[in-house]
Every structure is written in structure tokens, then in C-alpha cells.
Image (cartoon, rainbow over all chains, first blue to last red; front, side, top):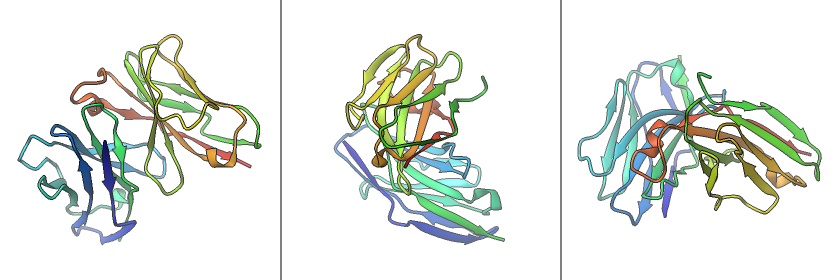
Length: 113
Length: 119
């Protein structure tokens, strides 16, 4: 079983600056996957980035990158050059061998112009 | 269709009323998932279908919740005798990949959900 914890209910960033969203998780499994999803007001969950636990290299997708610290069970998301369209709820999620994806409680990101 | 379509987008039900929520997955997607998202929370797993077979319903909160996918495409989540604690957004997601299996969640496409309010 996995648990996912997001300790930042809200975060704010100035446009064009960088922000980091925190996530910690707990699992007894050795093989798992971690995800960051974005949920705008339209409510649709959009995959931002994913990380396989067996990979040591941090995943990167354009302006989005993760800092995956396996020993510390930490999986933070860094958004560079923040844009107004990045404003949304961000959910960290983990998937184990049973593909039972668990989500954190979310972080609301505000981007200030 | 191009995406996962859910209807209705909003539903207001009186306590005790039965409701039916519809999900149209992406054509050809084998796996279909239902999630419940309470206000201010992350989505919680409800149930999973592989084609028409309901392989996991461990997340359904009570026997008032029932889901079906009779022809392996459209799915309906039914809630009987709704209660106020059922108020939430119900999200549907579909995937081309089978579950279990590594990366099954890679191809998740979510719908925009149905916001159910029980008054």
C-alpha cells in the first residue's frame, strides 16, 4: 500500500520565476511509479511528469522537472519560468504493483503576473 | 471520441434520490477507472474495469454504489439513495494498457468529471 503526502496546501510564484512543490510518499514496494498531475478549474487531470522508481535520473519535461530522492521518499516538482497557465491544483500520485494509484491532497499553485 | 467524456457535468440530487453518472472512454481503451474526489482532496479510487469485466471494486464506499460497463465501452456509475457525504466530483479515466502491469497508468486520460451535490 502507498500513502502520498503533500504538505503545502497553497503555493504562490511570480510569473517567470521558479517554484518547487513538495511531495513525500511511503511504500513497502520496491517497484513503483510516481506522477505529478495538474488539475485546472476544468477538473480534468492532466499528466505533467512521471518517474519510474528504478531510474536514478530525474525526469524532465520542458519546464517541469522532479527531484526524486528515493532514500528519503521524496518527489518534488520544480516548475521553471512559471507561466500564468501553470496556475492550477497539482497532485502527486504513486502507483505500485497493483496499479492502485494513490493521490496526495494537492497543492494549489497561484501565479502572479 | 478524442477524449474521455462524462455526463452530466453537474448533478444536484435530493437526499435519497438515485443518480446515474455516465463515462464515455476513448474508443478502443481497454481499462476504465472511476475515482471520487471530495472537495479539497485528491481523487480516491473506486473501481476498475478491463473491457466489460469489473476486476476491482475495492474502493466502492458502500453497497449503494454500483458500476457497470456491459459492452466494454461506456460505463455508468450508479449511486442509490444518495446521502450528503456522497457529494463529490466523480472522475472517470481510461487507458489503452491492461492492468496490472508496469506503466498501465502511463496512458491514463481523465474526463472532466461530474460534480454531484446532494441536498
